[in-house]
Amino acid sequence: QVQLVESGGGLVQAGESLRLSCAASGRTFNIYYMGWFRQAPGKEREFVQGIRWNAGNTGNADSVKGRFTITRDNAKNTMYLQMNSLKPEDTAVYYCAAKVTANWGFSLANTYDYWGQGTQVTVSS
Image (cartoon, rainbow, N blue to C red):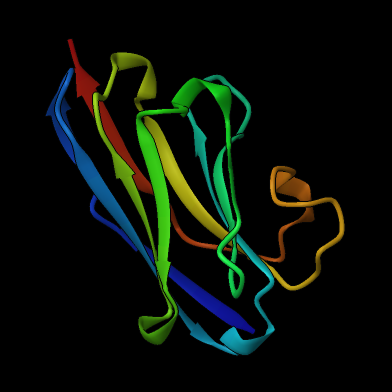
């Protein structure tokens, strides 16, 4: 089992920045990919960014390209999402997730094995 705890959400104005953290515990040596997803009210959960836990390869959604950056600190078992130039349309609950296989890459939510509880990000205009 892997446990994930997000932190760092909040209320900001458009153009400002936030950094989310996701602390992993438990059998973290099994993690192959980790990812950030978000879900706005009335919408489906969507992929934001993902990272291969050991190698560091990353991928991101077009909507956040150039604004968001995913990183991880393996020694701390923590993943981060640096969000710059935030827009009102970035408002959502942000979730971190982990998967233990390479199958299907890191962008499909239904292939992830473990999820955090989510953290709210609200961007006002």
